[in-house]
Image 1 (cartoon, helix red, strand yellow):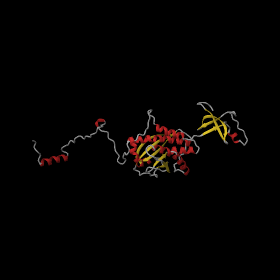
Image 2 (cartoon, rainbow, N blue to C red):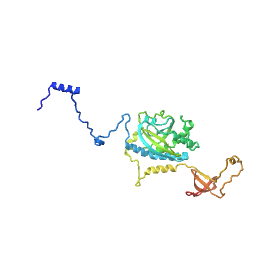
Image 3 (cartoon, one colour):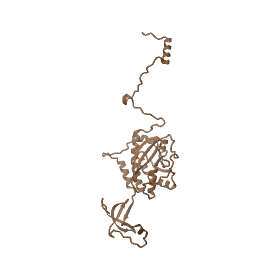
Length: 338
């Protein structure tokens, strides 16, 4: 049996340790983890308690899938409104604070408040100045190639045009969300300064959807901000329900049906052209009532029906119940000159 230390020896040992005259080796720290990384160390990630992760990655993926048909259908709606091809694809989907979301927006911008009728709170749909003023230029008769972007709030006319554009996104948004709950979205106020539109406190968690909008050869950005408190009642359903109703061929038939329905309802411009010719500016300025304009087209030649500016059919002119009409003769083949 070893001799026990007396009190004086214990006091001397404690003094030597505290003075540093006797080094003490600490036992190696051990972290128990089933998944260890390199050199046996577990992977460690920083957790920000000011920005809690309230939505799982699986739920983020489900939300992204939910809004894919929304993007395509809005593109179809805007194609008919602007009479030019608009293609929209969903990009990143992230959760962040509302302050972080608004800090990433341009000021001024086009910021529409959107209200769901069966859920508490509001969401917002934002168009970057580049894409918004391209749309304004297109609606005003321009080609939207190089619109002027003023660094000021929206005018009353611009706000009305913005309302017309954003209103076309309400039905596709309602259709997309209808797969999880019966809801109709309506457009509220239009703001230029995102800092003014405080739909939730700055530190509240939101889901930010980024969309890439391609129009007239340019790609710009659109975003949708959904506060967590709006979608919180649907999280259980979101995690439980299967979003992609795929058939044996792997296609998402729900999305295909929604897209086909909206494409069928999209308006297109149709014109019937009798003949075309080229004139000098001086001849044009000298035209008077009763002058004849000669064309290189025979009088019995059929008219050309143009769909969105492209020749699609040949037709004859006629009259029905007092109205001018055209009767389609045949379609124009690929590469065939009208």
